[in-house]
Each structure stands twice: as C-alpha cells, then as structure tokens.
Length: 147
Ligand code: 4NP
Image (cartoon, rainbow, N blue to C red):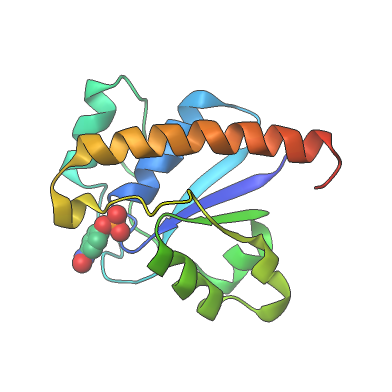
C-alpha cells in the first residue's frame, strides 16, 4: 500500500483537512499529515477545520495532534505533498537529496491558509478538488507501473 503524507506549516488547519478528506475518499492508501514547523507541536486540529469536518460529514480523529515531519517520514512515505509553495520549498530544503523526488505540490495553486484568511470553506473546496485530482493521478501512476 502506497503511503501519502500531506504537509503544511502548522499541521492544524490545511494538512489535517487534506488527511481526513482523502481518508473519506479512499481506503487504498496509508494517509497521514505533518507540519514543516514545530510551532503547533502537540496541539489539536484547529476548531475551524473540525467545524468543516462536522459540516461536511467527514469522519476524523479528534485526538490527532500536530507533528513536525521527521527524517524517518521522508524515508517512510512515498508521496510527500506540500499544501502551498512555501511548504514545498521548505520540504525541499529539509529533505535528504536522494528522497527529493517524493515531494510534490498538492495543487498547481497554493491552498490558502485559513489561519490567515479565516475562510475554512474556501480551503475545503480547494482541498476536496485537490484530493480528487491526486486520487486520479495516483491510480494512473500506479496502474502504469510508474510507481
Ligand atoms: P496550517 O495553518 O499550516 O494550515 O496548519 C497554520 C497554523 C498555525 C500557524 C500558521 C499557519 N502559526 O503561525 O502558528
């Protein structure tokens, strides 16, 4: 089973949103989320993201807390998806050279950070579209034997 990790700055708003939305769409992958920073280490998912899960009927683990990405994570996961451009660029700096091919942008356009915008619904729309797009891409890549 391929392993996917979604990564944002704090691991309390966008990447846990992507984690549990993707889990609601598929059982075919191992899916987790992480932060590039340690700023929110140990803190729970943001109330705004939890409200999105409740409003859209997305099951989630309310005991999930923020965790910074580690060297082991770079080795362990097959796909490391940064939620915005700065997450991708931070990941590329943190990642051992030989594993950098695992890092991809979650979407062509950065997912807006609701920590700053306050608009969790806009972020949810982008996360849902991005997860559907990745699901199609993963199925193609794996079927094509690319992975
Ligand atoms: P996230 O949002 O990266 O989507 O989890 C943020 C959460 C916390 C902070 C910034 C963004 N912060 O500055 O603590």
